[in-house]
Image (cartoon, rainbow, N blue to C red; front, side, top):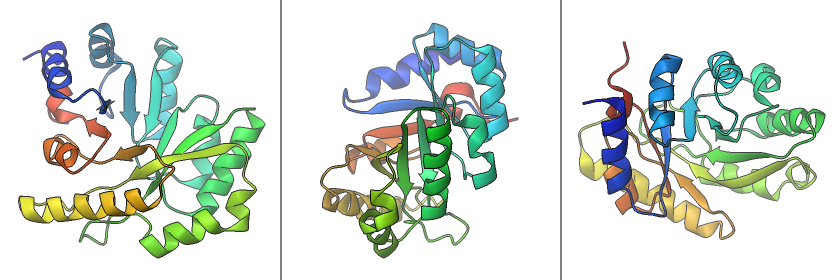
Length: 213
């Protein structure tokens, strides 16, 4: 099936309150343009340099989401244009985003990444660290970032019960924060379950663009 058809099939099945991020990392601009021509305006990348190159080359009404792990020294390259940074997992990174947003005279939206998976390799904060950040004086003084929600990645497993447990855990943490609107969880393999568990934003790549080369 074509990229366009894949995209339209997924979009038609998504509830209205769920935002689709088309994960376009490693894909050529021609593939992204096919999705763009089919109406997609939000794309997710995991490498800042690749995202910046695509931003330069593509229409300016696209929202670019940084979905990969962010190194503080790379923030300056995306600060002029990034719409949402998904994987914010430290106060130090927030400080850098705030600083670079200030230089570009804009406010950058961020999601705080919560560690819900069993794999140690995945990044993220625990609940205690989340609360420490949100209540810290340093965070309160940051005027150029806006925390709009939480993000998490489930364990890479076929065990649906375990994935459901992890998503439900993240939703419980999300519900305690009250003021946040976006809960980003769910990818190609588990987004339907994520939506059942309360996700409002899904990150889908291979189901739209096909597997990575």
